[in-house]
Length: 168
Image: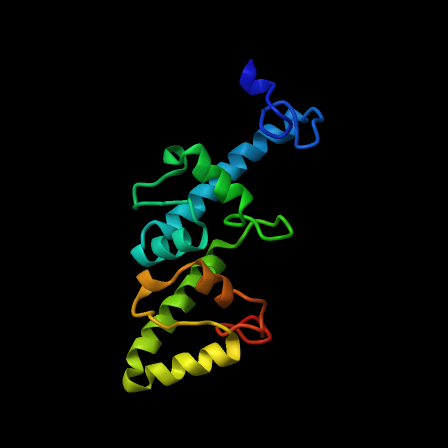
């Protein structure tokens, strides 16, 4: 009974405004949400680089390995996925998983290209910091990418390093 009558938005029966939920509408969204979470996990957990990047982007998410499924998520992990922008954009539209992994691929390619620059790497880091306000000092691998860098790299199309004005 306590779980059904908790604070507004945290229980099954009431929404964030304390209004009774339309359960005929709400319950099917839970199935759709689980399917969206699992699709996201299926794309992310198979790659160690993706795992690092998503964990860096969303502190506290702590996805660990390819055995992570929607059923093995903790309540805290589920909340982060649903409420912190992992699954939904700012307009509350579901994120396209291929766009998410495409972004992570861009970050991986940037680190690879930076490391391939050899003796030009320090100059490139200075230029990138000057033009895009992205400080890549000390980035030698994906493990060195943190939330600050991910946030700076994911700026609006045209304003960031990874995408042009058309978002490509």
